[in-house]
Length: 268
Image (spheres, rainbow, N blue to C red):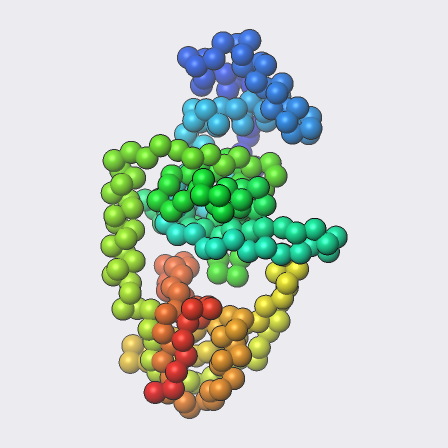
């Protein structure tokens, strides 16, 4: 959790006094507290109000600075969205989750939307290339690195884009084009790790295995997920194979190769 000292509501009012009278400010704080079931105090409600009005830009965390176990406010462009996934909870009720990638001028970050926020994607309210601001998201270590979740106490808003944002979108598109040749790896299998089973937050289970591949550029590690683990069983140490349509993740300045559902594994 972030340990940054929270300002008082009187200190925060200075940031929006040009937009709201003190009376309106107090009324809005009261409304926000009621919306949250009186689980937050005046200072926390004032913080949410100031952020919602876009007047607390100093609080925005750059995506490259996000780390696990943090409460963060972030802002960026949606560069990609995965299809919604529906799951069943232990109590029999259905839930929905959507994963997307947010990009700013420092890097990219996986964003996880749940239920009502996931519906906003399904209904077309949230689309690729839109600019989003997420207030009070919570971060955790996901299977492919740090990810930010929009939870019950988070706020998600659609922001207006400026000229800089359009440049950011074009740069991201060019980066994707530049990386296309890197989505295929060919080499000899040096080792295949035992398959591990893990449980996801939605209470489904998955599979993961790791392959060390000797390529022309050296030894590369490929992480193989779920259905691709089954496909991997057709190969053995010493086989020469080609992994196509790999996902590339940047972690600590290094490239990580992941074989997900769209990947293809073939013998050469």
